[in-house]
Image (cartoon, rainbow, N blue to C red; front, side, top):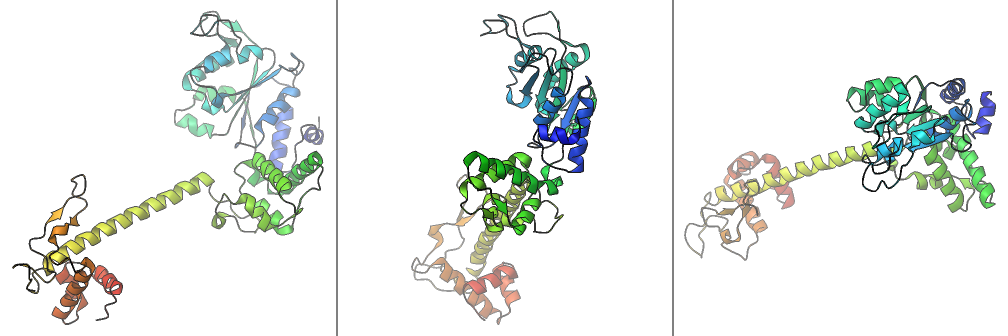
Length: 412
């Protein structure tokens, strides 16, 4: 079967060289019994390639409708995955009231497609390796091996080589599955195919709901091509269908299109220039922004603590800098506070947050802000307007003093 016929039969749209190379590999390897590993991001169509391989093999006529069994390894709970794959005998565990075939036995003579193979637990990887090497399974609760004839096509969206290096995936199983690999490129690497896919999905919706198809303006087309498409073909189809059904305007402009791509911040959107590098993935953007916010918050808290300590030291120092008789007793300084100052700890008794207690305020009619302002004015007067020396007397930084001068509108 030639590539063009293959594309029409499986409704594959696109002329990207990487896609065509993948299709050519699939059709060449289909008649063999080699185990195939299909790699690529989620949404690129790995399941379609498993069908291409099976339906163009000698196994396609085995058990009509049951020749290809698809299994999502990441969707089966770890506690039941062995029973799901290899079956179990009656009484093997609580609730096993009858003998049940597993997916491998159901696919006997045909093909089994193990999607998300990278999510398979390590204990199950050992057992899968035995199946691939010996061509036999042992149902849960049984001690008798059963011979099977199953071709395995596996797929993953994780970096399987990295998983092997990190010990999350067995190296021997990787080589056994990877007798031949097929890589499916993400949509952002097939920019020229994006408008073709959009037009196809738009036509499908128009035909289904009896409405005129939507079309892109030139700027919207460029925006669509430069969008990162982390959900790949699945995401593009979903967005195209949304626009076609929701929008009354059939000519789609960038303003309309942006409403459907807005979950990525506008500043992260690629410019309307061809070959613009794709931004980081949405999840990475979120993690980075959260980290920056956390760092900023930590810096703000440290500055607040510093100001509290500066204020405490300023009150303590200036309480005795210039005597200021107080009608409430001796020993009060310029702030009208009794010395020594008493401070209380934070709520949990920790030493990281100090606050002035209410009882140190001798004159309740004057706010703390007024007292702070008076202290700064007196320090400046005491030092003939020398701000550096005034800050030193106040035991605060010049930066804090300048901020306070601005806050209290002091121009001396």
